[in-house]
Amino acid sequence: MILDIFQNQRTTISMTQQLSQSISLLQYSTMELKEFIQEAALENPLVEIEDKKYMTTKTNTTKAANDSDDDYIERIPNEENLIWDELLKEIQISNCTNRERVILAKIILNLNESGFLDGDYSTLTRECDITDAELDEHIILLQNFGPQGVGARSLKECLKLQVRNESAYFQTIVQHSIKEITEGNWEKIAQQFKMSGKELTTFIEMAKKLKIKPFVYERVNSEYLHLYPDVIIEKYNQGFNVRLNESCIPNIKVNEYYMSLEKQNKELKTYIKKHYKDYLWLTHSIEKRQETLMNVTKSILMYQQDLFDKKSNMINPMTLEAIASDIDMSVSTISRTIKNKVIQSPIGTFYLTDLFSSKLCSNMGDNVSSINVKNLINTYIKEENKAAPLSDNTLSTMLKEQNGIEISRRTVTKYRKAMKIGSSTDRKKKM
Image 1 (tube, rainbow, N blue to C red):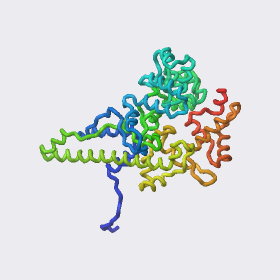
Image 2 (image 1 turned 90 degrees about the vertical axis):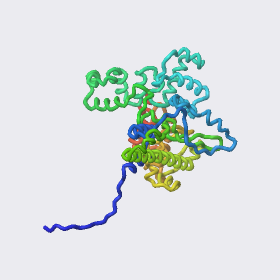
Image 3 (image 1 turned 135 degrees about the horizontal axis):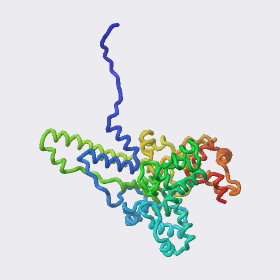
Image 4 (image 1 turned 60 degrees about the vertical axis):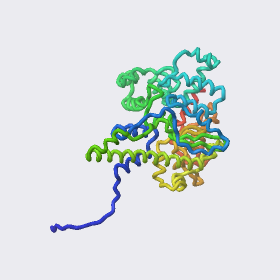
């Protein structure tokens, strides 16, 4: 064996910690960004944050010249009332009648900080000028908006609302095991309902997702996220107003006191210099994230203007590649930008990713958005014979035969549950 020394030259790409964090920052939802800034302030003494008292937004508008700026001020909600304001906005863009909107608004303003409806119902019926039965009807209507469980009058009703799309068996267990579920006493539940090991495991997984309060501050993928849209599109006369929701993102500034210590000694100067560099990176990265999100949203609006203008109920074909080409960015950047982001618009509140063509294809070779498929499923169910509701397998066949869309029964089931529509068996029982 001969030992020798060789010299090789090669090119590698190394990702610095800051570059990695910049990529992560682009993917954060608004609530996650808030948490990240708070953590950065704890780690860096030069980062000073203060909560905003009122909503501030970065805006790009296509409003007409005669529009008044005072109208914007009227629509800016106080952050302290943001949860209630978002619910009020949601009913304003719903298909409810004007009278229903007024009654729903009064009910929403009577929700407590946990999202429950408590208090004197007789006073509420007098304020709304309705009967007790009509109040119950409007409460049920409200419970279809916002996070699951909102408008519940008790913990039992809150949990019941969250499992209404589960099997009748699990619904029964939840209704009779409120105390056991909150205490995590799974053994007692298993004994009482004689559950098998597999049934218990499935039930525990489902039960652990239940919330004891409708208004809870959770991270991404929770129902509460829909109350904090990352970007908002509003119809404004002949155009649209696009703004980023920065109401919960704290203001960031440098701590002047620590900066003044820089001149004391060399060691302290080095320390301050390093953390000031981190402060500049943080502010620059946030600005870049906001700028990118705004540009992506404006490009999406251009592609889907008829949809947002309610001239069409179908999404125009749109891909990541198309948006990337339009604003001269990479596909990976667009993918990271729309990840976990929620948009509030005249047609509803949903994830930005729902606007893009999915892997579903028609027999014409065109990409089909999941929202379009959901709309078709919803239409078929609305028009079905209520005495013989359509099964998921039948819906899958109809989509293929009538629209040329290849979609499995399992995917139909997933979309149906996402729209909070019961199974064919449940729909038949409700007759």
